Length: 398
Image 1 (cartoon, rainbow, N blue to C red):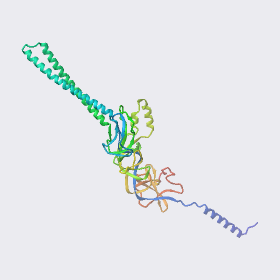
Image 2 (image 1 turned 180 degrees about the vertical axis):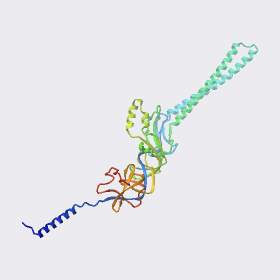
Image 3 (image 1 turned 135 degrees about the horizontal axis):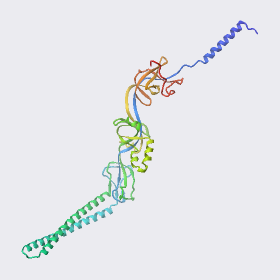
Image 4 (image 1 turned 90 degrees about the horizontal axis):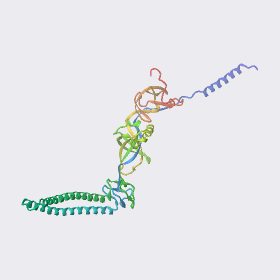
């Protein structure tokens, strides 16, 4: 079949149109950039820790004497003042002990009076024997016997003086023990625990049994566990804030008061026996090490409670109204920092200097101006995340 010129022209037009459509449909889409403007903002460099709330002052109120708990004067949650009666131990046995001690004291005093009367008699007899001896009217044996009786009685009186002192000590001890049956609170606070109930018998022979626990809840102390990697960046006087699980949006602010010099597991290491010290040391070397940071917070409404968990943030450094960009826009190479700045829809690499940095933003010290736009990523997959936080070496002249 023979084609005419018109046919060849028509075929060429069809092929050209098809090629044009093919090229149009396969045209690469323009690169779309994910950007962020350079803007002024506040930035904080922080250390995060987990803490536990405790009362600033907490006392276990116990009994120094044994006996049956006769009455408990308080209930759980009650507020008590310093010196207030909170419990009473049955005083009968201690009252009897005091009576016996007082009787022994009175007996010793009575014996002393009798010996003093006898001493007067022996002193007069000895003086008579001396006068008679000077006139050769008595024998030497009678004189020596009178002297011995006088000396013996004086020694017995000295012994009774010591017994009286001992009896007085017994009386004072018995009075003190009797007073211990009236148990008072050593601090003002709230009853947070009742350990011993009415009718129970307490035994104070080996250790002081706890009756109740009283805590001053007006101020709470937070013990925040700071990791060994972060503790070198933390110092007393730094501002802190924390939240509790029940109110994650409410921040409580305070100032770091102290950092304990020993790690949190130091006490357990000290209490370990020598036979297990080697295994304890090897296990502790592979576990995380923490140090307690302490700070206090006012708690006038007693909303915070003992043993609550606190999510603590310690502000190690902060700057206000400084230029910032997202940290995801920054690439690093050889301890230098670079960003891609969008200029007329084309990214250009630029070296920058940064200052403070938190988990989201970094402070710009040099290299960028306000309202410039930096590239975080693009639809071609070229972003800081895809390069693992690094970039290829910059071209010569960068």
